[in-house]
Image 1 (cartoon, helix red, strand yellow):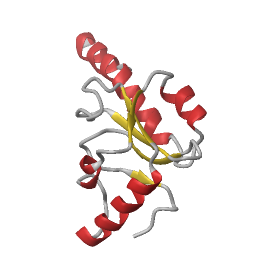
Image 2 (tube, helix red, strand yellow; image 1 turned 180 degrees about the vertical axis):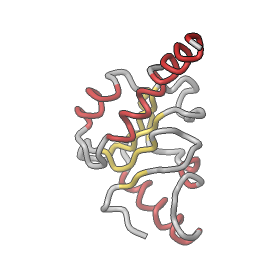
Image 3 (spheres, one colour; image 1 turned 90 degrees about the vertical axis):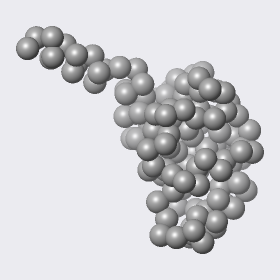
Amino acid sequence: MLGLIALFVGLQFAPDRQRRRHAARLPVGADSAVVLRTLGARPTRCPAGAMEHVRGELNTPSDLEDDSVMIQLRRGTRQRWLYPGRGGCTPGQGETEVGIDAAGRVLWIQPSARNGDVRLSPSITY
C-alpha cells in the first residue's frame, strides 16, 4: 500500500505534470515574462511557420471555423514556445506549446499537446 501511495505522489509531482497544470492556469494574454517565470526560462523557441498540428486540436464547431482560426493564428503568432521541446519545433505528446504575439503576449496556449484544449485569446474569433 505504501508503494502505491509513493507512486501516486511521484506521478502527481512529476515535472511534466506540474508544468501542464501551471500552463492550464496561465491566462491567455499574459506577458511573456509571466510565461517564463511560470513555465521556465528555457523553452524551445520556434518560428510561427508550421502550425498545422494545432488545427486538429481546436475545439471549433466546423472546418470553416478551423480555417478562420488558423488564418488568425498564422497572422498573429510571432513565435511558438515549446516546453520542453524534446523533438525540436514539433510538439511531442504531452508537451506544452505557447503562441506568442508581436506584443510579447500569449495569443494561444496548449497545455498538453495532442490532447486538445487549445485556449485562444478572445481576439481570435470564428
